[in-house]
Image (cartoon, rainbow, N blue to C red):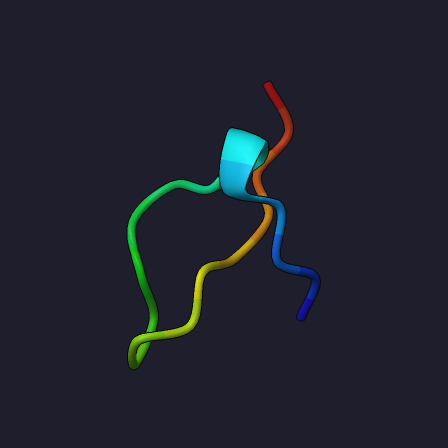
Length: 21
């Protein structure tokens, strides 16, 4: 998974997952 703090939505097992705005 790619961790983009500016585009993070929620957390999956503590891992941020990328979402497209």
